[in-house]
Amino acid sequence: MLALRLVTGSHPLVQLRRLLVATAAAGVGFLLLCALGYAAGHPARSSDAALRLLWCLPPLVATVQFAVAVARTDPSTRPRPGLSAVGLGPGRLTVIAAASTAVACALGSLLALLFYLHLRGDITGLPFDGAAADLLAADRPLPLAGALTLLALVPVAAATAAGLALRPGRPEPAPDRSPTAGMPWGVALLTGGLAVETYAARGDGGGLFAGWFLTAIGLAMIGPSLTYACGRLLQTARPGAVRLLAGRVLMTESRRLGRPLGILAAVGSAGVAAATYYGGAAFGPLTWLGALVVVGCTTATLLTAALEARQSRARTTAALHRLGAPPTILRTTALLRAGALIAVFVPLTWLVGTLAAIPLQK
Image 1: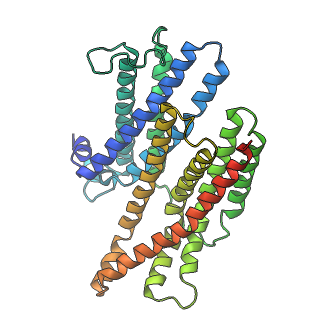
Image 2: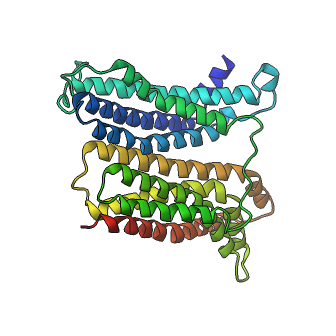
Image 3: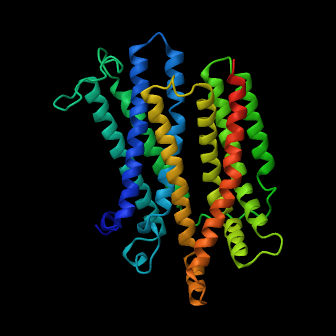
């Protein structure tokens, strides 16, 4: 009962983040069900059905990443004095975090199933009865076992990832010691991904997916190094208090902020490449839904990571206030950090997207 009250009695903003996780899980669940419906309605096109299911992986990964970020910033999962005495130690709190993540994602999967059945016409009495019956193969029975298996992917993956991220005794990642750290492997994966995209540009979508996936991993590995380098550059040439503080924060939080920034850059570069080649004309509603889930989850993950970084600096901020530091200094350092990251990651996103779009040109 106490564990339940810890979860349900959270701040409204925490509940809002859990609701956003459920919404993202609903979007992924609907995409998975649509891929299953396509496979049921087109049994002779197994390769196309497998490709549709494969392209559901980026929204799924983005949703799991967002769910883990929300679980990390959940106040109810932090050890507090007195909780161990009533049986809520770090291990039990980790279980609570994983369970709450699973419940939020399961709720989203259930909503996706209900909405999918409603659009097929299996559930009536609502405004859109059978509105997409032809698209969702309503003339064929829905494989129940396959549907439940696909819908269980997001809750199981998110709960497992949250449990591993918050497990007791897990060492916190140390800040990068050098701006060359992680860069070689990241550059290798980035160039390899672009090469695969070039080779597969005239082939099927599986090769393009593999190339983009390698590119995304490379940018995620480069992100912390670039964030660290931004912090180092801000402190060059006789820095004042503002530049020194902004640079130190970026160097300390390079891993926490760099990876979400790298993933967001990968998503943005994919959008640049798609907009350059397709212009949005060939995108269907399911493509827009998947893009919305990926962009929304990666952006929300970055904002959540920034909130977590701010919470970790609470003692430092309080010490600066006690020393008489004016509030304008903290705001200026925040703007300086944001400006430095934008100046690095926006051109990188445009460059990678442009290079990825070149082999697609006829």
